[in-house]
Image 1 (cartoon, helix red, strand yellow):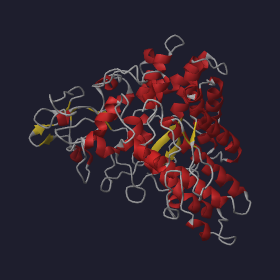
Image 2 (cartoon, rainbow, N blue to C red; image 1 turned 30 degrees about the horizontal axis):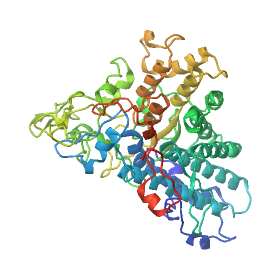
Image 3 (cartoon, helix red, strand yellow; image 1 turned 30 degrees about the vertical axis):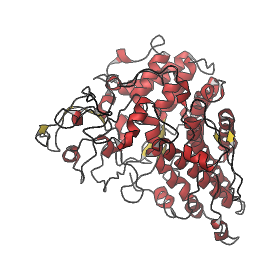
Image 4 (tube, helix red, strand yellow; image 1 turned 90 degrees about the vertical axis):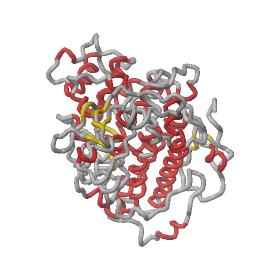
Length: 518
């Protein structure tokens, strides 16, 4: 990450507010901390007050990352000679055999609803402050963040509690139907659009702008048929065009630049990112999850990585050699930082994208060093390993929304029936992304006949690995039940397009109904 004004202020008062408890009952001690004389007045004071809303976002690349990624076809986290079994949680994610007590299912719920509770608590304080333009903008920013948190929880769990106030009483919230939550999120974003900043600057980096809201609305409308039963493709085009025509964003010339350790506000493509720092804003541990132990020597790291997450063979095979996006994968012979072949414990480090073989009688174990299990699978380094990492933490900021997604959403909406743009406009939008990947091979560029929904589905896989879109894409395209590496097709289990309401949440709140099928 690059040094920036906004990051300093986002974490200035990171401990100011205590996280809530899963959207049910909250600590009300903070009410006494603010009086008419101490309410925020300057932009810096407003930023300091709202800091906890943004620090909560760092769980996106931990809890939500695991939930969205580990059950999709882009990755597998097998047991390797006993390593990475972790109570069977990654096995269950791969086979789609999670339960209401599953660790990842529960931890993500707690993260999301604690973040929503923090938003409501901050709003309750802001609403008492004297009226000002800064107050109005800040309230709209926090509501936009709350909408984003609600979007993720609604996408994952469907029917969820909808709480919009800081409730210090004992009344517990009941379940709200997914379609109603969807409508609330859309309305809240649309109602607050006018107050959000149009600027793309250091000061707005890591905070929701008008373009953040338009992108999230496009994403909501893209999945409207899933969420509410009613499609609205023209709205996808409308909100995508708002971002595209703003002139604020441009595709990176080098696809991977926007994910490097020094990424930040100066990158032209990201619309919303979560700031991370190896010492002050920790939580980006992805390099540890994917790299082999010996990659410590490749990237001059101070620690040994964990050697776990890798690509499923069929997903890796989507990437053609001529596609610039294939550069995000490590496979084959590995080398140290001086170009010498890597050796680890007497074995040459050659990563085999296909060598996944379950040990007979084992529980999801593909074996250790002797049978190649620890060398199985291509490793994704889209978020390039940070040699200045501290302990397990890297400084790459995490990209949540970017222009390439907006362009492909517009193209998909047209193919699905939007009349607000033409097929030629859809081809142009998709080709902006495609031509970056294949700048020389013009025969790989889309035409009106080759730009199909299947082509869009594949393109999204190639473009958005580890960007937490794959599960949602698979569901929208009706592919969530497809067979994966070891998982058989489970066409009769469409109820698993939603995760169960966690057992712990229902034990604490008997008004929460369980999702059908669980």
